[in-house]
Amino acid sequence: MQLKYSRQREAIKEFLCTRKDHPTADVVYRNVSEQYPNISLGTVYRNLTLLADLGEIQRLHMGDGQDHFDADTSNHYHFVCNQCGKVIDLDMDSIEQINDIAGMNFRGKIAGHVTYFYGTCEDCTQEKS
Image (cartoon, rainbow, N blue to C red; front, side):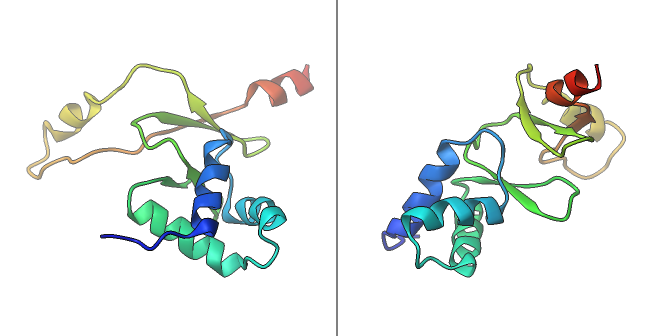
C-alpha cells in the first residue's frame, strides 16, 4: 500500500523514535502539537492507528485503558511499574521457546505471544527507601 507522504505522520513517527517510555496518544499529541499547532488529537489517533496497522510502530495494551506506542518493532519485552505506570523495555534474552511450550498440548497453531512483566521500577523502589 503506497501512502501519500504526510509531514504530520512523519513528525509523529520521529517523536516516537526519540522516546523509550512508550507514550500514550495524548502525550504524542501534546508534543507534536508544539511543532504543528493545528494538528488535532483525532489526526494523531488516526496516524498512530495507521502506523501500527502498517507495522511501523507497536501498539501496546498495558491494562490501564490507554494504548501506548513504541517505535521499536523488534521482538522485545516490557516491564510495567505497578506504582507509577511507567512502561520500560527489558534488556533480556528472547523467550520465543514459550510458543513451543504453549503449543505442546494445543491442537491449533501458536503464532506468537505478548508478555508483560509487572512490579516496581527502580525510581519507585528508591522513593520507598
